[in-house]
Image 1: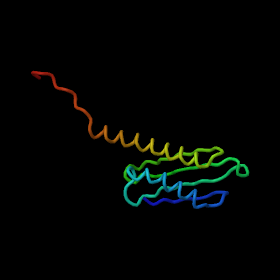
Image 2: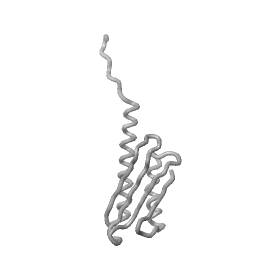
Image 3: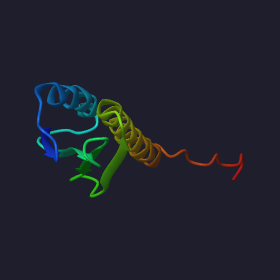
Image 4: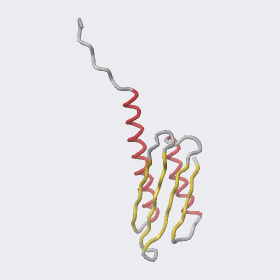
Length: 111
C-alpha cells in the first residue's frame, strides 16, 4: 500500500505522520499490493478546527471509499476517519463474500 499524506494550512510533524501511518496499517488487510491511499489533514479557522480525509479507489472493485471528519482534536479526527473507512471496507468485503457464497434454496423432496 502506498500512503500519501498531505498537509493543508498546517505544518507537517513527525508525530502526526506516525499517527496516520499507525492507523493506515489497519487498512492493509483490505488493501493489497501497491494501491494508493490518500490522507489529507489540515486546519481551518486559524487552527481552531482541524479536518482529516481519507480517500482510496479500489482498483479491483472500481469503487471509491472516502471519509472526512472535522473538529478541534486532529488526532481524534484521524482516528474516526480511519474507523469510517475500515467500516466501509468491511461492509464491501462482507457483500462480496455473501455474493460468492450465496445459499441455494433447498429442493423439495420428490421434485
